[in-house]
Length: 156
Image (cartoon, rainbow, N blue to C red; front, top):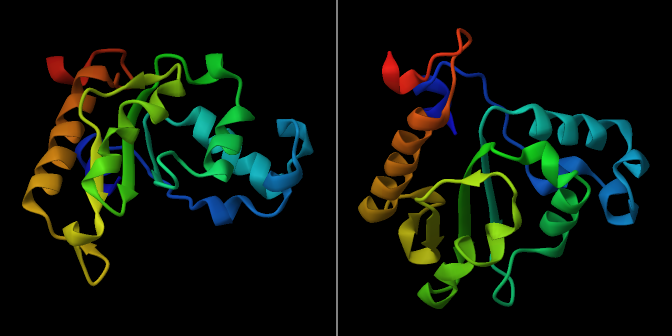
């Protein structure tokens, strides 16, 4: 997230699903969320780029992750660049980023990022392969972002 923000002169915010709070679990509609959760939902919708991720649970993303995005009108994300990321206990779940997270009407970047426990040391991503994939996703964003003057960043 920080690499994208720095490279493309964007501000960034990072949220964990816990930040949305307890109203998420009982909300049937976005209007049912408390003020903090609605503000986070608004930030997601207004973002120029999304980097979303979920741990893999039984071969899929978590229920609260899905529920959060179910509360957003799919057309609100249409065409928005999204970097899909996931973590899991093993390589067998790596297709989650291409299969399960493809529900977005947003523009999912061609390069997704999946990491397992072995890719981290003391909570820090250390795998050169995964770091290269993340850098490749950052590069792909340049083609999609539009700066304030309406000229593609790649053309500057």
